[in-house]
Length: 309
Image (cartoon, rainbow, N blue to C red):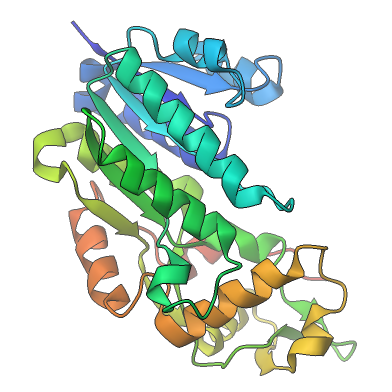
């Protein structure tokens, strides 16, 4: 008899990757049946899951009764929370994460895998306190560890997919491109192919839940400096791409209202490391324990070319 795996954020990058991995893995597809949880079952992504015989259920993290329905009968839950950038963003996210965990316990779920991040305020010794999306997830993780439920954690690095959008190189007007940020060119980001590789990390936990109980997968292929990122994009695209460190004020121009979060997030990574002082070792352990080879940034770009005009 298969165990029911309930996946929140099923139509997003993380949840979608897990579903694809489990369905295509001979061992896991025999061990687990999947329930995809989404806010909009009518979306094209949700409809595509239905065509793959995946059970699709509607639930919003603010609706506790819907959470009970979504997790009823589940053996394992993959849970994640989405950040908001309102004045009470951290409180909102922590409240939703705790509610999800409480319902999992109430529904007698045996195992929860939570998508977490490091506590930037703590790691930085209180220097950077505005990286609320990191702190919120870390505090939810701490709460889950106090509950009578087995757990493991997936902590994704910086998404390679971001270089298709918010972190995409900008044209200089001379035929070249630049990535301009306020941090040092030596700032290192742990990069993950979120769509291609999330399932490999979570799949390792699903395959050996006892082995990884209580563990945190600091999930990334490797660390790449801002300079190396630009060089790799240049190599794969055949275009001239450089990294330029600029003052904070020019970088701030054109950013959304929650600019402080982005600015502190990158300064935190520059000064303390994405996962703290042991970032390199933590990333190496996670990549070595992933269930399958994870993609390098060059491999990702080759498969997913950036749109550079």
